[in-house]
Image (cartoon, rainbow, N blue to C red):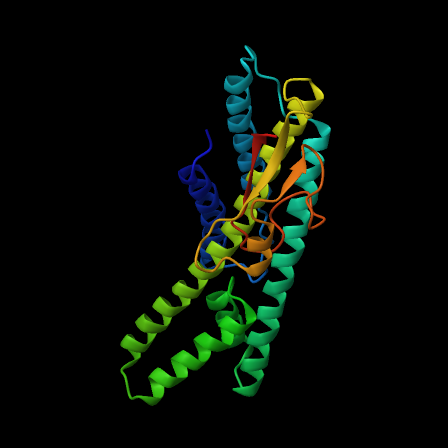
Length: 251
């Protein structure tokens, strides 16, 4: 059975991969920023979730064997979704670099100072770049010593990096795990293991305090195995940081 602990582990793995990338970029002596590639973690989570769902189906229907989810179709989804994430994250990274260059221009920084600032802030969202700079400026206005300013600014920067990493982790982890589960259900249906006339998939919202109206409206809605829900989607996620999942139940 797939548990909340499993989902938390999958999202943590995705978040950790981004944090490690950002940390490595900061420490790198190269001026060029390398592209963050989430595909290894997305592939891992997809198949782990799918295999876990196959275990559930095998137990439910007394199937004495495990078929392999790995297929050209599965790899195509992993490749397409990873590509979307790479484009999105790269775009926000480039926007952050543009913001840093604007700040550098306004403050009259030299080229080496600009490069140092880019390295220090890599991985942050554009608005977080501004937030860190403003935070540091306010600390400096307070008359605080440079050592304390540096320490507190770095602590704040790490907090914002962790915020973004968590956002990416939930988005990628939930997307890959939900798609793996969906693929397992659809493959089981095609093989005659999961009877589509007797079972359906049900949308489950997380119920967390920040659950949006869109997700709460979808909560409890049903769709055929391999079909679409009343909101027109194949299932969650329908937006970044979506914690929703899907289960199967007897009609």
